Image 1: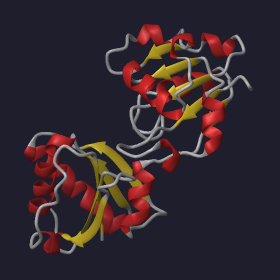
Image 2: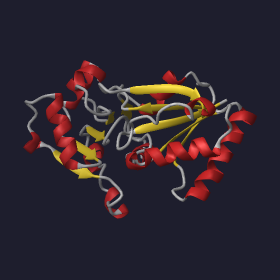
Image 3: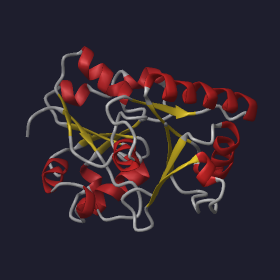
Length: 235
C-alpha cells in the first residue's frame, strides 16, 4: 500500500456503496488505518457499509470540521509523514470539494506529500452534467447570503455573469431553507433565465429538472424541503 493521502468519496444519500463507488475504492479503504473525517460516527458507518468485516477498533480517526481547533490540524498528517497511508472522508460526495478536507490537502501539497483522489459522486458535477447548461464555463458559489435583501443582490450579480460571461452559476442552501431559496430565485431573476433544480442526486427519489423562471412560476414547488439540493442558473 503506497503511503499517500487518499481522498475517499462517499455516497450522497440513501443508495448503496456498490451503486456509486468503484470496487477498487474498497481495496484501498481496507488497507488504510488512519482517517481524517468530518464526523467520526458517520465515517464509521460508511466504512461498515463498504465492508462489514472492517475492524473499526483498529482504526485511528482525526476529526476535521467547523469545531476543530486549527492548531490541532497541523499534526494530522504525522502518520503519512511516517510512511502510513491515510484517507480523508467527507460527510457526502467528494472530499475537499466544498468541504473542510481541503485544508489538509493544502497542507499535504505544501509538504510535497502524495495526494490521490479516488473516483466517486460529486453533486456539483452530476447536477451540471444533467442540467443542459454550459459545462465549459461555470462557477460554484457555495451558500448565498441568508438575508433576503443581500441574497437578492447576489442573485442579480450571478445573473449578470450568466448573460455577460456565458457562465453557469451553481449554489446550494441549507436543506431546510430550499423553499425560501427557490422563491427568492423566482422573485429576483428574469423570466427567461433558466433554473435547474437537482435534488437527492444518485438516490431513489432523485429529481433533476430545468425550466425558465417564467415556466417554474406555473409549476408546483418541488418537494425538496430538507433534502440536499443544488440550484443552477444559466441563460
